[in-house]
Image (cartoon, rainbow, N blue to C red; front, side, top):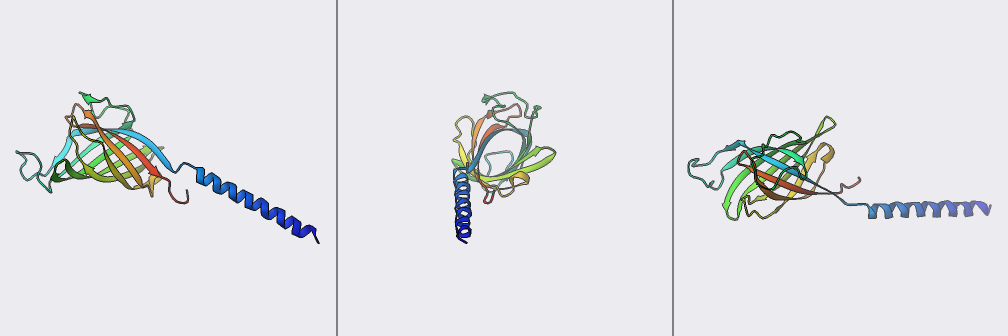
Length: 186
């Protein structure tokens, strides 16, 4: 009869030590996933609805939409270039919806859509924030990751955007540094 309580004690201690090991592993696990992507905005896709299209700058409330291609980090060169934003090697499609605030140095509110295809499935990240694109001289901006689909479902965190330069379509080349937060229960 004395062996049963002793056996239960051993089993209990073993279970407790295993649980403590799991908790230690979880607390030491990396809580963020970081990666970087380049985007070549395509000026030929730019659509504006300015109040006075002949005399920019945009007025408060004007909207613009532009698309581009996503590339692996380091693909796009810095500075003023004649590079083609449709160059082969893209890993996804980027879309920007811009609403003018006309309050320098912040030029507008943006929503970015990063559609990435991997293994035949599309996943998307959605980012929102304030924009101050100018070249040269842009200050990097930090935006909120507000969600995603596919492998990014439930994503949140921050992304730092910087202007690399311009491309042959007279539009920006951008670099985005993502910091995704660990999803609960993952």
